[in-house]
Image (cartoon, rainbow, N blue to C red; front, side):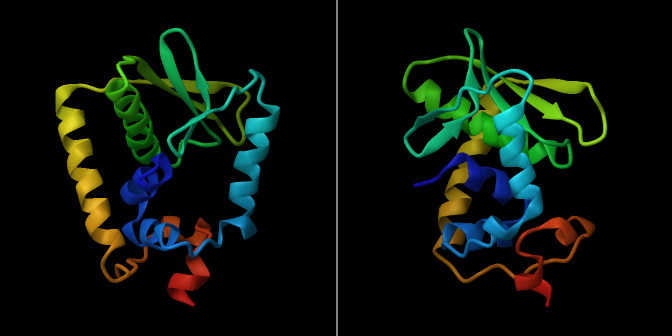
Length: 160
């Protein structure tokens, strides 16, 4: 079953997505992952996590599905994760807009970014879902080193 995390990891790194999908989980040892979980727990606005069909949405308001992120380090991945949530809700007849709320590491203010599921993004999302299914059932993609890899929980697995 595809989840929002799969979509996020697919955009961020296909190797990370494959490792996560194949249950090679090193994230429990990651400080960044722990910080993100704590931010969910102590955020200024209470996060009311909603779970359905294997996905967890941080908050649903009258108009928005809200995804909370600790930093803006990969907003493109967060955007597609949120588009996936909007798509799943749309399949159930629930039409909402999306909003990413970013808690900056060293700043007191937070950013809010609106995300809309339109025909073009829905078409691309379906292509991403099909590609994820193919990748999961194939060999692990070869890791490609980028600067962002140094903060990844899988860094040692891929490069050491």
